Length: 382
Image (cartoon, rainbow, N blue to C red; front, side, top):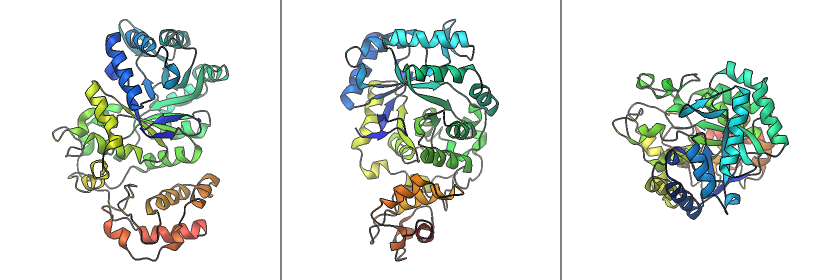
């Protein structure tokens, strides 16, 4: 298993994380089997959006003696009421729900306290300036949560949260089809087939800006819905018109700026094993570029997907890395210091490009790589 820095939090999370869907309404023995497999495969990050009491209690028991091996992304504002999950902003319920969570998990803290599910800017403003954020800051100051997170499907909300300076981690829905859609408040629209009629050119600019903003500001992204609820894995159901593999979807998410871990919504041990096997998959098995370039309903022409097909460069330039840093810099009026520093440590800069065109011939998306190298050299000075 490979590990990545989760933004500015100081946490190292496994590239493959675990969503809690597969452990809901399971026996303790079944939950323990999931935790055993996670420990065996080096999966150390668990998202806990569900407040289901059996999940919380079973996981707490399963973590006995090994709690320090796992990073818990636990959600505020989710409670169990009348036998089902409920999202709440009522502070009495929010506080009681969090205390229940810690008690059942048999711990005095969680590493990430995720403010649950904000998909409208109006609700973000209410949370930002209201008692929920004050409570999250109170928990962080007391060491009961290590950092503040937020979950959303709306890039406008994600950008605002990152720019607030209060949110360290964003749990966001990342997959190649969602990335084509503009910001919206209704998650059902993101999944609706009617939203994917006709051809689409490039990633939605706000989603692109979200990833770049998080990268620039040190806000780590953990990923939900990498498989689009499973639809992307089916020829019949895929909104792209063609099935992708789990490894292609995972690799796509992990190559977005700021992304640290993909929360696998595994519902069985075999599904979790398959996701973890991404780490042993070959470059060819992970490669999404050829699949994307041939998707019948989508065109990515001219947009760098950071897929690495431009390599190898005869001058040794990491063309994809230079392009990513160039895009991060272009998004700002001034050159961010962190971007400049990351560029400075590259062994070869864009200025070493000899315009041989080898990278452009290999690019499945028609990206003007040589022009990008020229612009990078002008911007960064080498």
